Length: 279
Image (tube, rainbow, N blue to C red; front, top):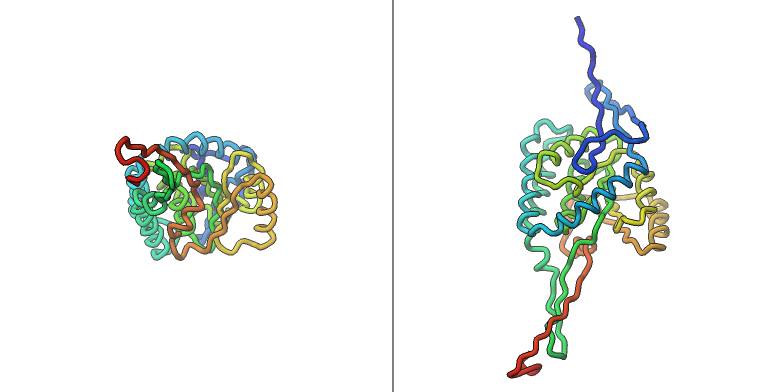
């Protein structure tokens, strides 16, 4: 007797939980094995809830030591590596994604040193600049980059201490769902990384009109008309729209800097003996 076929239902990953879209929308996506996966399509309300979760979690994530954030990124690499053979992607893509996470884990306790500066001043003060987290980032990786594009966005945003909402194309729902399972079993605090499926252009439109989103992160060759529209709309609220190349190479320190803010600190350097001349 033949068995009843079990089709997967892929859920959004918000605040550390797997949820269905409040809209009830589902897209049936065929797989290469003759099956169908039902992908929950994220809505404006789902995105609003994810932004709230990311904002709440971001402070605690940024407050962790850089060494600890590196450990957690490395733990995610371990989880993906253990599932590499079962991921719905090529072996090369899976291995590249694991290597990319290890790369960012290594940068976690070094990036602040590279980007911070001691500024020369002519008074009896010590003045230095350091980078700090930007806040909540909404990222749309290029579907052509596959799993590597998703982990590139996760690594770049979280290594700088940001909360992240990852908008993946519905056609890649099965791959993104496999990533959320690895995230769920890693040590990432709930809400730091949230994963959506759906129409990227639609979800980016919702994100660009949300007052509590600090930056949009667009990877790959996004349509020029879409990028121009987002830039014009977000310029009105001084929100950053970051355009990056494909995920073939990891972001360098200067590219990571745009996912942060620069904080300048003044400290008195007065000494009774020597004073300003000592500096």
